[in-house]
Length: 96
Image (tube, rainbow, N blue to C red; front, top):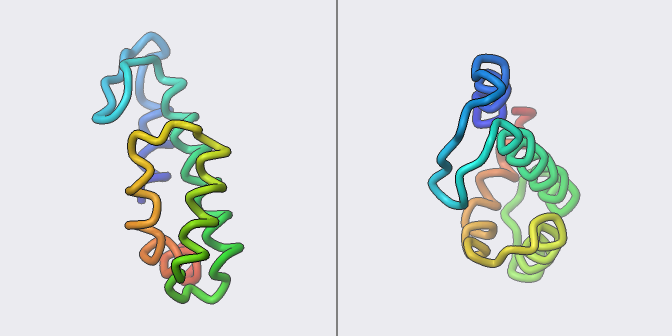
């Protein structure tokens, strides 16, 4: 659903809009593309680690965090990556 909302916003917001994300600095609508890229990378990595949608073990969570830090080096919200991993695995396995 988040990806759909990002796509919708990208199509509706004026190109000169300023966005104020809950985490991070204000920026233009290019923030939406960056968020989409991050979420798609997260889903791809979770799909690789858990193709059947099973819960990730500690080693898989660590691998997921490492992969996402290569995509976005900031560690400010690193702890959130593992928290949502199982929900993302189930969502990806269900084809959503």
